[in-house]
Picture 1 (tube, rainbow, N blue to C red):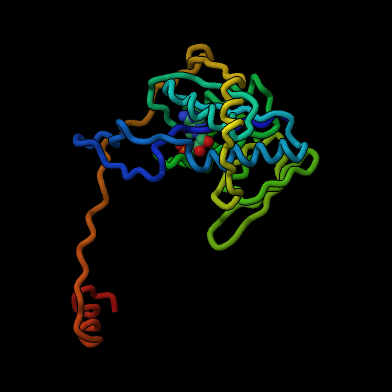
Picture 2: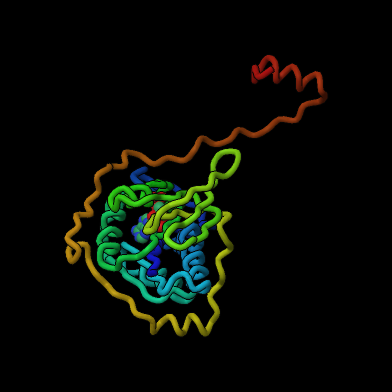
Amino acid sequence: MIILVAIKRVVDYNVRVRPTTDQSGVEISNAKMSMNPFDEIAVEEAIRLKEAGIASEVVVASFGVKQCQETIRTALAMGADRGVHVETEVELQPLAVAKLLKTIVDKEKPGMVILGKQAIDDDANQTGQMLASLLNWGQGTFACNVKVDSDKVIVSREIDGGTQTLSLKLPAVITTDLRLNEPRYAKLPDIMKAKKKPLETLTPEDLDIDVSPRLKILKVSEPPKREAGVMVADVTELLDKLRNEAKVI
Ligand code: AMP
């Protein structure tokens, strides 16, 4: 079984992003970029399934600017077998990504597609669900445990206050949550080897997919600044403020 993993190049999670001065988006020029953390977990899970003899090949796909190829090389260094890059300068929205992924699924015929539950830049949490719908496959989102059992996959999902376990018929779409695994670091020899692994490059036009945005971002703004705290002299003053100023008791 081939496993297809979708990996997005995003602003590194350590970077403190700010809205652009015209509030049309987020300032990312010169910011450090990395693989979306949930996608690292997706790559790790696919590699573990290959190491367990369940998957035969791990294919990673990334869509966007030329530098996405660096993200693909990182996944190849972790242990993925080959990469597909669909190059475009268009700001891709989840529906466009899901449509591109579907064309790759139609070609590669994977038994499973693993995505991150969300990309930490747009926080959309939509692509996996849209892809499952386009493919008419079952979906196990927010996965914290994945076990393949012949023609089924048992997925435990993080839900409010607990976990839910589903049995899905393969092929299926899975999206990863934080607790699924701890991704490995690529070792230097593997980084060197990854440079020679196959990387196919395509364009949305090659795949006949219209990736133009369907949603328009009207405004991006920072959350309101938190006001500074005040020291109170004693419990009586605290109670007075809670009762009469904050009006919470
Ligand atoms: P989102 O729905 O935007 O929060 O993204 C969810 C997941 O879809 C990500 O964690 C990736 O696995 C995948 N994805 C989103 N955008 C891209 C992209 N441009 N290239 C490859 N995978 C992507």
